[in-house]
Structures are given as C-alpha cells and as structure tokens.
Image (cartoon, rainbow, N blue to C red; front, side):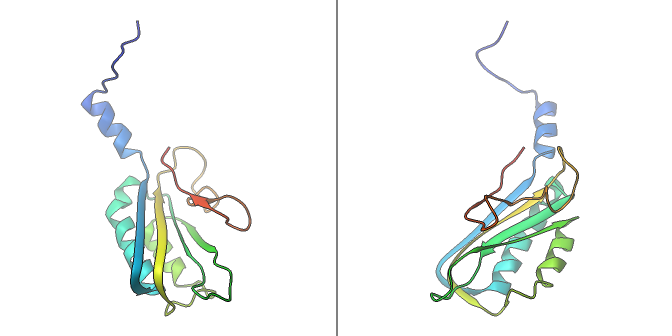
Length: 140
C-alpha cells in the first residue's frame, strides 16, 4: 500500500543530504568587481560547501565586459577539491584578473561523484554546446 504522505526518516534524510553536491551562485549588479574578486567570492562559497563533494569542482563566469566583443560564458572545471580548482583559475592565460565588471553573474559547483568517474568532463557546470549558449548545474 502506498502512503499519500512521504515521510523520510532522519537517518535517511541525513544520508541523502550528505551525498548532494554543493552549489553556489554570486551576482553583482552595478557594483564594480574585478574578475579576481569574483573568483575569490566563488571559491570562498565553494569552500564552505566542500563537505558536499570533493571529487571535482567548477565555475562558470561571464566572459568579456567589452561592448565590442560578444559576451560569452567562461567555464573552468577541475578534478579534485576546491583548492585544485582555485589553482587552476589562476593558470588561465585567457582571463585578465584585473578586468572590472559592473554587472556579473557566476555559478560554482563542487561534486560528489555518485554517477560517472570524477573528472573534468563529468564536473559541473555542464554546457549546452561548444559556444556555451547556456550552462547548468544540478544536484543528483
């Protein structure tokens, strides 16, 4: 017989919460921030959620802040913990850390590998296509 209400026992709920990934987002609107400050905020958010996953981590940030160049989404993903992602962010030659954004949105994810091996391909954010028209992060 199926119950109409779904009640999960406390131990089961705790186990489910422990296996969920960590998701963090950061948005600033009309508050100038450098790319370095944005990275620092995203990494700090992930560090607080790292207990939710240490197999891989990734971020998606706005690309250029120049009207001449088309805006795009920059993805950086790394197998390993948040520290490994932090180190990888500063190795990206294509990103000027001093560039200032007046409006910006970034998302970050730390993964507990419940399906698929821990690697950059399985890390989030996942992209829609080669042009990164949109990216997504999800739990489970």
